[in-house]
Image (cartoon, rainbow, N blue to C red; front, top):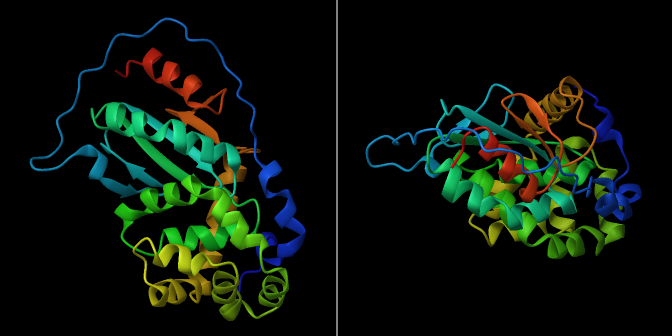
Length: 249
C-alpha cells in the first residue's frame, strides 16, 4: 500500500491554517493589447461546449472543446479562499462567454493542501464526470459552511484520522458533514461512502496530484496556465485580459 506524505498528516493541525494556506495575491500583468480574435468553433450537433467534459491524462477535468486553441488550466484546492473567489467571480463568464465559444477549454486539476482536500475531491469525482466542476463550485460557493463542518467536531475528526485507511475517509466524511453536504447536491450518501472506502483509488489520486504539483512547480493556489505558460495572477480581472490577448472573445 502506498504511503504518501499527505495521508500521514494530522488533520487537526492543518484545520486552522486552511484559509491562509492558499495564495490570495491578486497580482496583475496589465491588460495589454488584444490579439486578433479567434473564430468561434461550433459544438457537435445537439451539444454545448460547456457540457462536454474530458478527463485528461493528468487526471484533470477539462470542460469545453478538447481541441480548443486556448487551453486554460487551474490548479486549485477545495479549501482555498482565493480559489473560492475565482469560482464566484470568474467561472460564469469563463464558461458562458469563452468556453461556450469553443475557443477556450478549462481544465481543473487538484492541489491538496491538507487531507480534507483529498476527501472533498474524492466526493466531487465520485459521480459522473460532468458533475465534477459543478460540485466543486458548490463547495467554493459554500466554503464558510464547509469550514464549519470541518472544524465543528474536532474530537470525532481526530478519532477518524487514527483509523485504518479503509475506514478513515468514510469516518472523516461523516464527522465533517461532507457526506451530508454532497448528498444534498445529488451524490447519495451510500455512493459517497463507497468512493471514500476505495483507498486504492484515493492513494492513486494523491500520488497523481503530488506528481503534477512537482512537475509544474505549483507552490500556491490557484495557479493558472494558459497553453502551458504560467499566468502571473490569480483573479478573473487578470485572467480575462490574458485570454483576450491570446485571441479569446
